[in-house]
Amino acid sequence: MKVTITEQTSPKSQEILQALQDAVTKELDKKRRLGQPVVIWQDGQPVLVDADVAVKAETGTNS
Image (cartoon, rainbow, N blue to C red; front, top):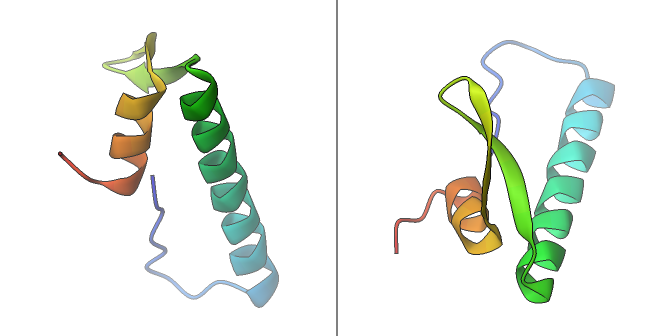
């Protein structure tokens, strides 16, 4: 999931957000390659899903 900030943020905040997004992307790719499921938050509760589903949700692709 990519977060878009609509208000002015400090360069340090932008750097932190980018680092977090990079870490999530790296971990989802690792889990996808290993065939491991991931836990996501859906409809108010945690759900175990295939890593490919989480990668598609993170990148915003439907195919």
